[in-house]
Length: 116
Length: 113
Image (cartoon, rainbow over all chains, first blue to last red; front, side):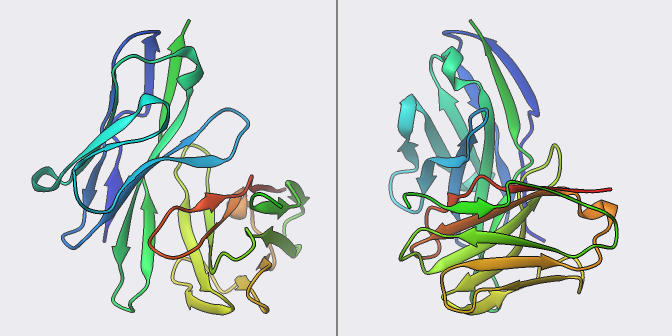
């Protein structure tokens, strides 16, 4: 069965530190990849996505992610975090099912706390 | 409305009661998804609609769970004879097409006592 692994469940950083959150998936077919973020008290919202083309994608608020097909990875990065980046981050992958529909599979999430 | 709305936001049910959770997607969004999110976990897929057609219900955990979207817009997730293990946040998301960005509602937090 397809799965998404997020290696870090909790991350604590000081402001201005660099961030990298790992995401690995298990699926051999064509994938579409997403990072969603949930700020405290808010809905899940899209941070960035990869469908095709340049494997380095840029999202909102200075986030970027790199798709490495050979490693089945889609790690999220930010060179310098801010206190306002405190949130929970979810990696998600879509895969095409045998019935021709798409299924979205989410990782378990990483809680990031940025200390001011 | 500008976003996906869900009601109620909180629901407390006694074990054995039936509950109905409502989702109003973004106008014009063809695709609608329901997810279950347990504490400390990511959203788990329950079911997917394209317009009024339920194309995938493989994630529904038991036959006590039932979802509908009769006119292709508002959707209702119904849970019959609720059990304690049904306690979770139920998320609804809509999108213009699949695969593409999903827009999530605030969720309904269901607590079964």
